[in-house]
Every structure is written in C-alpha cells, then in structure tokens.
Length: 435
Image 1 (cartoon, rainbow, N blue to C red):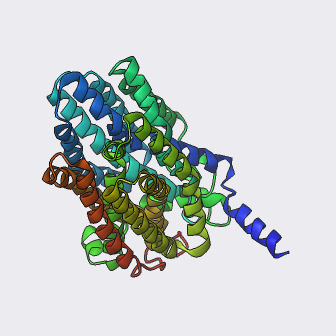
Image 2: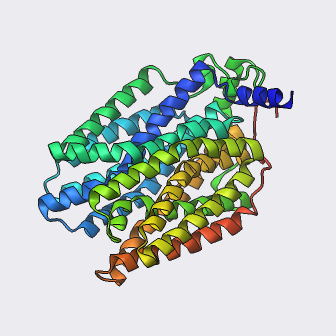
Image 3: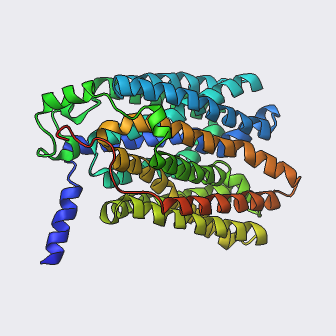
C-alpha cells in the first residue's frame, strides 16, 4: 500500500502535461546547443591551430574574454527579462548566435576567429544560464527539481554526441560544423517565435501543470507582468543567501571549466590518443545523462539544500580522483574521475536554478537570477585565465600542469562544500499571487 502511495506521488510530480513536456524538450535543446560553445573547443581549437598555425593558448584566451563580456550581456538580458518577458531576448540571442556561428566558420585570421569566439561564448553563456533558468522558473516553480533534471540532460548530450559530430564535420571542411550550428540556431529561434510563450498561462496551462496552484490564468498573467520585486541589487548584496548561492555555484562552475573545456587534451597528457580522449568524453557524458534526472529526483525527495550538500561532496571526490590520476598517470583513475565529473554536470546546471527558485520564489526569481548569473559567470570565466597560467608554470610537463589545476579545483570544491551547509530551504521571496 505504501509503495502504491509513493508511486502515485512520484507520478503526480512528473505529470508535467503535454505542454509542460514540450517546454522541457525545448529547454533541453537550448541547453544542448548553448553548451556546445565550450564543449566544441575540445576539437575546434586543434582544427584551427593545425590549419592556420595559430597558438592554441591564445585561442583559448578568447574564451576567457568572452566569458567576461558575457557578464555584461547577462546583466542586460536579465534586466530586459525582468521588465518584459523571457521570449523576446531569447529569440534575439538565438539569431545573434546563428550569425556568429556562421562567421566563426569563415574565419581565416586569428582576429576574425577571436571576435567570433568571444561573442559566441558571451551570448551562449547568457542564453544557457539566464534564458533556460527563467523558463524553468516560470513553468515549474514547485516541480523544479525533476523538470530541470530532464532539461539539463541536454548539457551531457552536448558532450556525448555533439563533440564527436563536430569532429566528423571538421573532416568534411573546417566550416561545416559552424554552418550546421548556425542552421540549428535559426530553426530554434523560429520555433520560439511561432510556438513558445513566456508563461504557461499564455499557453492555456498552469505552472507545474497544477490547476489549483494559481488563480485565474488571465489575472495571474497580469499579476506577473505588473509585479515589482523588492529585491534590488543593493538588497541582494545584503542578503546572505544570495552570496552563498553565487559563491557555491561559481566555485563549482570553475571546476566544470577545468574539467570539460580541455578534457581531451588533459587525457592526452597521460597517454591517450585524441580518438581515445573523444571516446571517453562521449562515454562519460552518456553515463551522465541519467545522472541529470537522478539529481533532480534527489532534489525533489530530500530538498534542494541537502541535494546541494551531496552534490558538493560528489565534486570533492571527483577532484581528488583527478589529482590522483594526473599524479600517477593512471588511466583507470582518470577515466573514473571523468565519469564522476560527467555525472556532476547535469546536477550543477540543475541545482543552481533550483536553489534560486527555492530561496527567492517564482515572482522574485528574475530579480535574483539576473544578479546571481553574472557573479557565477565571472568566477567560472576567471578559471579560463587561471588554467593557462598554471599550465605555463610547468612548461612542457602537461601532466604535472593538469595535476596542479585539479589541486586547485579540489580546494575550491571543499570551500563550496563548507558554504553549502549554511544554505537554507526557506523561501524569502514571493511564491504565488495569493501571498
């Protein structure tokens, strides 16, 4: 009898409705294509470097510049979304990315390549963190854990399948994968224009697919559009939970950058071939796909704070394994660490917006998210600048260089773990119109 009750509750939580599932799939695709901006560097940097003789470290530094520019764009996007809606700036961002991907594929000089990559990273970061999280907050304020668990699978699939596809298309021509990405962004933008709505009420649905969760749809839309959040930037800076969320996820995203952006070259430093590196990136990411759902399920069952606590422990273990693998050159240890890191990927993108929704609620989410995201982008972008310095300090010994990188990652993850115990599940923002 208890089992039947548990199953019934779980079924209710995953009953997103047809329109809800469609929005989850739409967001899943957004995660997939925007994550590709960083994932593709595993193979595209080598391709351009071989074709034109450009320095790979210089090419990677453009990603760092793009990350910092993304802070400014994220602030602008967040402000526009809070004052208008999530649809319009997202569509604009997709069309801009379509043009940038095409331009990147045509680059024949380092300046052209740098400009394209800087802007692609900046806009991809923004759409990946601002647009997706706002969509999930609007549609699933209570079922956020499971909904994000499904949507963020797109991050792992980007690493698992899109990177190998990118490599195959590079074999056709250096511009082929970039033209393909441009076409995908155009299609996604058109879908957003003609089908997607900023709020479930505008689609004739309810948040969380629960008719009793809110009042009349028309009144609810009016309430959302007219709502003015009391969480100004100044108030957020005085709010402890804001800083805890920003720092915890900023530090973990620094670990993500160290892990994913150059995973293939890192594996090559301990004796893997480029083909083996791509294979293990794919294998690890495939394993990480169901992990996205499991992190969402954990979030839903034990609460977001406890899920974040476990997530930080997961990161510490993965970082320690990476240090051990890089120190000994042990392929097995390195492969295990890669798999564990891949499992963490979906959880990171899942738990960050979930924690923001948990603390600030559906109505104040936009006000908080527009400030949290730039802080997180700033921290993770700093890692793009730190990694080359650490690698350069060890000269030609890439194996030692990456070991030092992961010693730093371990320290950052331990700090994040300590901070995570001070998080709260208490909602301090506005959850629904009846409050």
